[in-house]
Image (cartoon, rainbow, N blue to C red; front, side):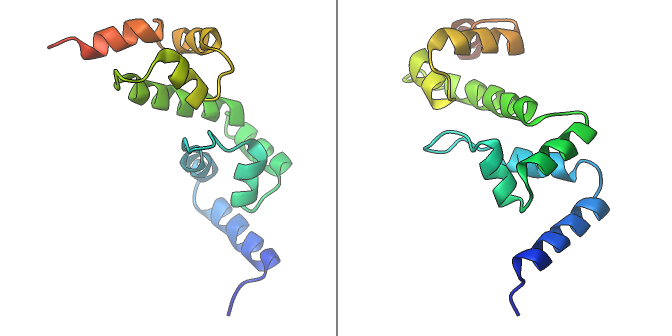
Amino acid sequence: MPQTPIASRRATRGTEQSAGPDQVVQRVRAELSLGAEGYPDLSGVSTRLLTSSRSLKRHLQQRGTSFQQLLDEARHRDALRLLQNPDLEIRQIAAALGYQDPPSFTRAFRRWTGQTPLQARATATQPR
């Protein structure tokens, strides 16, 4: 018998409460995958997790993080992966990750790693 949205939501809440404190964070991380349209926003993630945006923000805050921090983690992870492809230009990577311009991406990447995307690419492609 299919669950109603209310029953599904109650089941999800029960899972969140019994699965441990990091369950919500892990579920949000799993939802933050780079797709053809970029990353899902807070509203899209909360809808897929059957909760409101406000509740999701509260749950993340209780766990010492935020949606923006998790989005930055995802962008960092995907930037490192995309930089391994020498055929992609920095501006293409920046656009794919949701940055309006390459300098914004470069500043974020430097904050994450301490080096520019070009420096990271050069280091990653050097023979060992």
